[in-house]
Amino acid sequence: MLLERARVAPETAVERLAGMQAQLARPPFIGLWSRVDGFRREALVDAIDRRAVVRGTLMRGTIHLVSRGDYARFRPSVQPALSAGMQAILKDRLQGIDLESLVDAARGVFGEAPSTFAGLRQRLARRFPDLDERAMGYAVRMHLPLVQVPEGGQPWAYPGTANFALADAWLGEPVSISGPAHQLVLRYFAAFGPATLKDLQTWSYVPGLEPVVEELRPKLKLFRDERGRDLYDLPKAPRPPEDAPAPVRFLPEYDNLLLAFADRTRVVAEPHRKAMVTRNLFQPATLLVDGTVAATWTVTRARAKAALAIAPFVTLGRPVRAEIAEEGARLLAFLEPDARTADVQFVTRPR
Image (cartoon, rainbow, N blue to C red; front, side, top):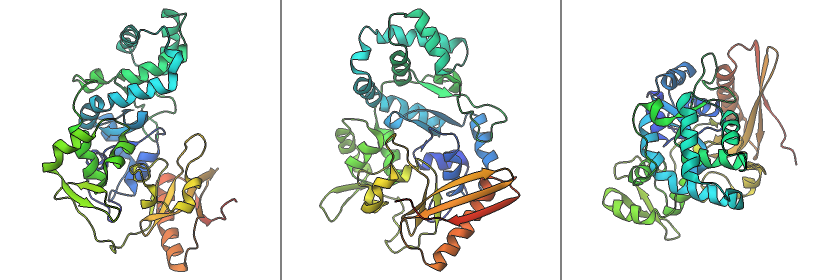
């Protein structure tokens, strides 16, 4: 939906993207604004309030915004990755923790009422005083299906520190932590194909997907790239020609396009990759020109004035800068509708 915006409902767009990474509440709104024709933030807020879209821990152990159906489909598939991630991060800090008892205790806490993880850790610390409080919280996050609770009056649906609720209670249906990964695999290739098995594993972190892909081969179309690697896609998926025009597009922090492939040079030129990820793994907001990352961008607000600062990686010609400025002005109007003045600026990248 980056070559041409689509006129679809927010939940449909989120499904087409196989979910949207959402550690922060605002980025998915920007990602949909760049992909959905006539998108309004109220439309996504409404989908979240209707529970047609939910926000919870999924691929790569990170918070994602997904449709309610995809949450129920994806959550069992990603459990092996969540368990492996917990083991890799906590290591010896898991000593003494009975995971089954811990998850049962946490289910009891969230079963009483939605809670923040700070509130959960306090309750768990009283129940298990000799155990690592933060290790317990992280283990629960990786093993108990939970979704974040939206809050009325928030511009991006969720507060900075949101309550979590039991996913099965929020959705009104059971959510398993064990099941096949076929739907996860098909949704990935529908969103990002043609892509390799390694791309799929990079996006999901789920181990052991090769047998699933082999089983699904009759439902997939196979290609080979110039390096002889197998690429998979859905048979009827659109595959625009290489010279298809790609308009300027603003992408938010953590956009899936930049996180969906093992070889990120498909989207980000090698000289710019180091500037794309900080030590704390923050993924900045980016600007696409002709389908590849040409700049990063930030928005600041000072009283009634909003400013969009664009820091290019490459020299941009005058016609492209004019296109960027026009799209940037629309983005500012979307993000800061009450600003009295809005300014789009091109700034020099720090060395």
